[in-house]
Image 1 (cartoon, helix red, strand yellow):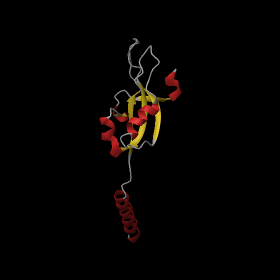
Image 2 (image 1 turned 135 degrees about the horizontal axis):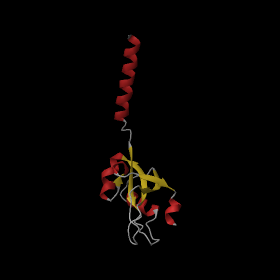
Image 3 (image 1 turned 90 degrees about the vertical axis):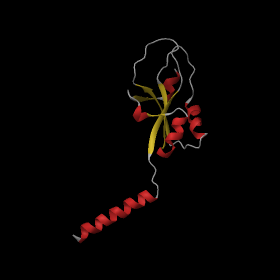
Length: 120
């Protein structure tokens, strides 16, 4: 009995310490690279990253992806290519104000792709 109380006390102390230290949680946000069909111009991932950094939003990782939604092949239509960044959850609102979306809210999902493949 004493041993289980000691374990429970230790767990509660640890959990309260975690809360007090402000352990960060992270989220993935995405933004279109603005590439359209029949054109080869797109925003580079470093430019998209700069949108976050300019607002003092730390970027922990970056990757590229493609949304899993169907689009008609029509010149000038979006290619559904996205840049994905891992940021602190506390910065989510600032990122959304810059046009980034929470990837977990993307209705059709997405898949990761090599960033170089988006430039071909």
